[in-house]
Amino acid sequence: MRRAPRASLPAVTTAAALLRLGQILSTIAAGTARHAARRSWRRLTRRQTATESWPEELARIVERLGPAFIKFAQIASTREDVLPPRACGALKRLHDAVEPMRHEDVHRALIEHFGPDWPELLPGFHPEPVGSGSIACVYPARLRDGTRVAVKLRRPGLTDTVRRDVTILCAVFALAGRLPGLRGAPLSDMAQAVGASVLRQLDLHTEARNLALLHEDLSTLECVAVPEPVPSLCGETCVVMGFLPGVQDRVDVAGLSPQRRRALAEQTLRAVFEMLFCTGLVHCDLHPGNLRLTSTGSVVVLDAGFVYRIPEVVRENLALFFLNLGFRNGPRCAEAVLASAEQVDRHSSTDTFTQDMTRLVDRFGGTTARDFDLIAFSTELFASQRRNGIYASSEFVFPLLALLMVEQTVRRLDPDVDFQAIARPIVYRAAAGRPAGERRRKLETQEST
Image (cartoon, rainbow, N blue to C red; front, side, top):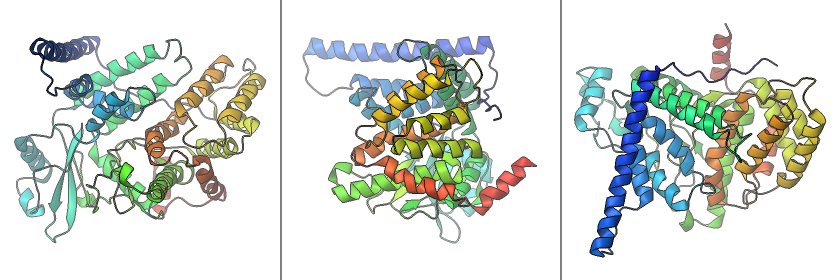
């Protein structure tokens, strides 16, 4: 098997990184001092009025630090099994409710992309955003023919700061991966993948292209929708896409019937497994801001900035792994991992690894979402690989990220859903050679020439 390429990050000078590190530490210190002052004032005055809690201050600090930190916080907010629920709740605001751009910045961005005559192209543009993320904001509009669209505009002046922040965060995660209890977990690979994705998200032209491919690949699934871009109006700093009704709806999961919750959980999993096993084009950033559950019973996939194409050989071994996980067949799961590893040689303890995998699969195989702990499972898997001299393909990190982002969403919807059983027919269909979409195949042909 060819060696899997690692995510490449731009070089940043030491002086620039140190300068930015000083700014980061200053921002954190200021936020911490502000929160401490509020607590002291409340104690001195003995006031019982509601004040900003520490999780909310944490979210404010992350928001001030910028897109790279916000992206990592978005991932962390989905992990209520790792962080305190209050912290996760506060960080979830960063999915799509970051402080929006000023109106003058919006106007400037429209002129830079469309030119001074932009009101003629978008006569129904509304300056109040329907979504406000770390890299871009989304605004409702209408085209000249009355078609409703959503206009995604990139925030100005992000590139240099994001590059420095990604370098710093990757170094921090690499050090964290050496701590007891985290050894073996692919923290460094994940940080590299997320960091590279943040940089790629600065190019909205690429996002428009990925959005078109996802729209085609998932079009066969019932109750799953992906907005379709308008290619002639998209560019490096702007994506114009179809407006999907109901996307703005916020669904109170607790208020849904058990049948509706289970249906939404199953639809979400089918969309992810379709990407993992059939199309190979995987959305790795399906946090609650990008995965909307509407009151009409649909699942809407948004924001294609962090999309990765899984090579065919990795996809085949991933399908083999999932299929045998459901059947509690540890030796076959081990075989799939070994087949996709970057390096297995005479120094590798394959027999011991197979025994580890058999015990691990016996424990987790065939379980429902309630009992399956993806973090515990993946940490033990990677730790066994490390102990036995088997170097995992870094490309397995991307499917792991995709599952990591939706695990908590699915668990909240229906903890008893059998995700391995849902994966099984999709794996069988993928094994039968189902084509993934004409446009995707054309793209693969172009990339190979």
